[in-house]
Length: 272
Image (cartoon, rainbow, N blue to C red; front, side, top):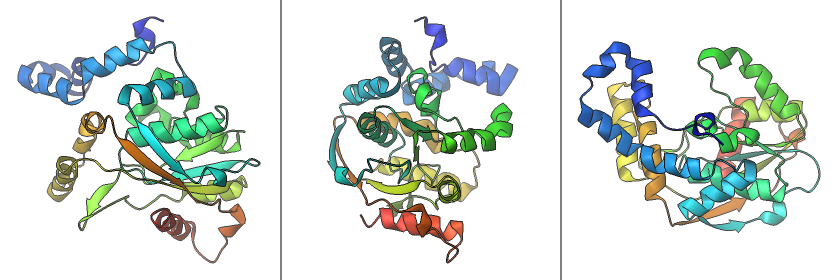
C-alpha cells in the first residue's frame, strides 16, 4: 500500500495549513520539538510497517508495538445476545482506546465501532472500526446522521463519554463530566449499556499542563499534543480492565434526566 494512502503525521504540513505564510517564521527548534513530542518519525515508521493491517488486526499490532499487557476481569459480564453500548473512563488517551477495542473486537469478531473524537481516528488501520465524530469543519453537519447510523447498525458501540482523557481535579484523577448521548441513543435503539473501568494514569507533567492551560484560559487543548508522548511513557505496562454488569436500557427511565443518568453510570464505573 502506498504511503500517501495512509495517515502519516506531518508537522510541517499542519503548521503550513494552520499558520499559512507565518509558518516560515516559526523557529526550526520549535518545529523540531513538536516533531519530537508527537513522536513523528517513530509513529510514521510503525504506521508504514502495518499499512496492510486494519480493524482488530491493526489493534493487535498496536498492542504488540506498545507492549500492552492486560489483566481483564468480568469477561463473563459480556452479553452474548443483543447489542451493547460499552462506556469507559478515559484515563490515558491512547492505550485505553486501543486495548478496549482489541478486547471487545476479539470477543465480538470485529463487530464493534468506536464513537470517539480522537487523533487516533485518523489512522487508516482503525477506519473500519470508526464513526468519525469530529464536530468541527465539514463533518459537523453529518454528525447527528453518523451517530444515528452507528447506533442503528448491528455493531456494538464503544464510547468514552467524557470526550477528553481524564484530568486531575482537586487532587483526584478522574474523567470530566460524561455527555448524555450514550444514554439517549441506547434507550432509543434499545441497547444495553455495559460499564467498563480502565485503570491507568498519565504523568504529573500532563495533568499540570492541562490545569495550567485551564487556569490561563487557553482554549486550545495543548495537552493533547503530549498524548503521543504519554503513550510512549506508558509502554511495557500492564493495565487492569474491569467489565461491569450490563445495565438494561429500561433502567434509564424518567426518574432522572439523561444527564443525571450519565453521571450515575460515570460514578458506577469508578466503583466497579
